[in-house]
Every structure is written in C-alpha cells, then in structure tokens.
Amino acid sequence: PARLCSRMLSVREQIAREMVGDLKAIANMGQMIFDSYWHNSKMRKDSKETKGSNGKDGKQSSPYGFDRPSQMYMNFDPHDDDEFAPSPLRKGNFDLLYLLTTQEAVLQLLKKGVIVDQDDAQNRASTAFLENFYRERLITHFVGAQWYGKGDDFIEELMLKSPILSSRTTVGDEKVDNTPLIVEPLRIAEQVLLLRDKLALEWMEIMQAVPSEHTDIRRMQLARLMGQPTLDTTDEFQ
Image 1 (cartoon, helix red, strand yellow):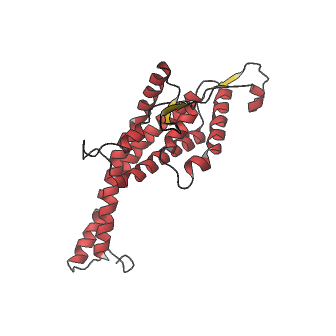
Image 2 (cartoon, one colour):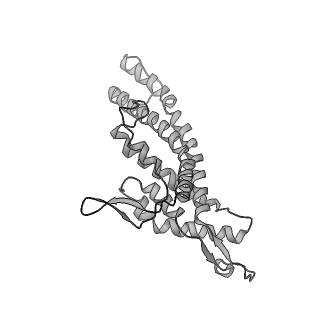
Image 3 (cartoon, rainbow, N blue to C red):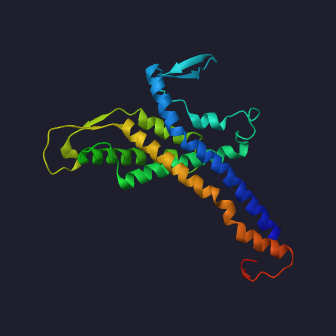
C-alpha cells in the first residue's frame, strides 16, 4: 500500500503541474478571444470554410466569431516545444478544465448579477438573459461527455447573439417607463471572459500548492518504507 500511495501522489502532482500551465494559458485567452473577434469583425470574416460533399472547399452560412485559442493550444505540434506542447493525455483534461472555468464564471456571474450599466433594470434584464441562455445550453454544452470545444461554442454563441430590446414592464419594474431596455450579449460575454480569467488564476494558485500538501504524507510514507514507527498515522490510513 505504501508503494501504491507513492505512485498515486506522483500522478496527482503531475496532473497538478500540468494544470498550472493549462490554467495560466486559459487566463490569457479571454483577451485573445476579444482581439480575434474584433479583428474578424473588421475583416468581415462571417463564414466558416468547410469541406463540401464533393471534397472541395465550400462555405456555409454559420457565423464565425473568433479564432479559438484553446484549439490551437490543444493541437500544438509537440516537436516545436516539448515543454509547452500538451501530450495526448492532457487534451481531455485541458478541455474539461476550460469548460469548467467557463461554467463556473457563468454561475458566479449569475449569483452576483450582471452589471453592464448603472440602470438596475438593465442589469436585471441582462442577468435574466444570461440565465435563460445558460439553461438552454446546460445539457448540450456542460453535462456529460461532450465534444472538444464546447466552452468556446458557448462563448461564441453568446457573443454572436443579436442585441435584444425589451420594455421595462417585462422585467418587473414598479414604475411604468417607456424607455426601452437593450440587452447586449457581447457585453455579457466580456464579463464572463474577464471573470473566467480571474478564476483561472485563482485555481492556478490552488494547483501550485498541491505538492506541498503531500509533504506530511510523504514523510509518513518514507517512515513506513524504512520500517520506522509512524505515530501520526492510524490503522485506517495504513
């Protein structure tokens, strides 16, 4: 059991070290996504190139939001830089981590409320929009086994949503006001990405502390392998 424990700790530390690098990369992807979005908007890049049924390049009418940095990270050529390139085993972990940070950013934003303006009614309308948008995509994007890139799919769909006009009476205001409310999904997506960058840095600090958390366990493990008495352990731990 002591040798098995050593292997388990080594694997856990290796995964933690890989996640530190992955989270550091995720923390820088929010700005990259917005830079790519505005560049594509300026260049009027509004269609994705696909392979047609005849094998030739064709185009479909689905909008193209941004170049996906997560896919470029996952498909990095391992021969270019062995330290930076993710191994095949890391692809699934990285995509899951990317998806979880996106989901947690949405949930925290819903909990504290979306703030896009000083108008409380507009903020409530934006929060309600994000909640409905998230619920509609909960099963297809976040629950169970998913294809790679679902985190980017969610952000892209949110960014490409058209602004919505609504009256103040539809969001529960007591005062009757004819001024329309404008819900801007692009500004909501910006808040999601900013919060995700912050969460990635916080999670990175947690992963960096994993090896130090194993110090006491490794000390007891070494004493066990050397045949020394381990007073700090219980029979259940042994």
